[in-house]
Length: 54
Image (cartoon, rainbow, N blue to C red; front, side, top):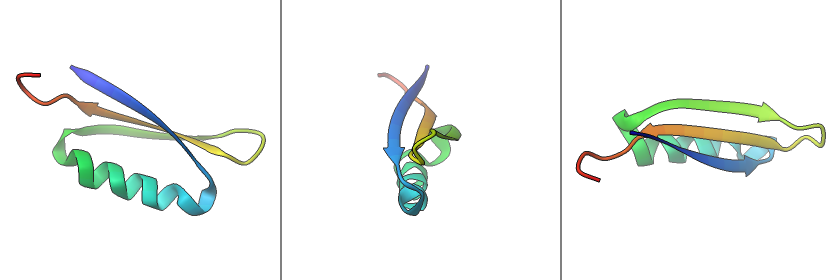
């Protein structure tokens, strides 16, 4: 089953958010989507595969 987490970040924080996702989910990570809103804030959608047996 795929799960999704939504994070908000400013430009200078994006690399930290992406690094955390890669470190936390590793090979279970499926997709990272980044979109910018009109105010310059970014929404990061992190999709990953749930752990087996959960």
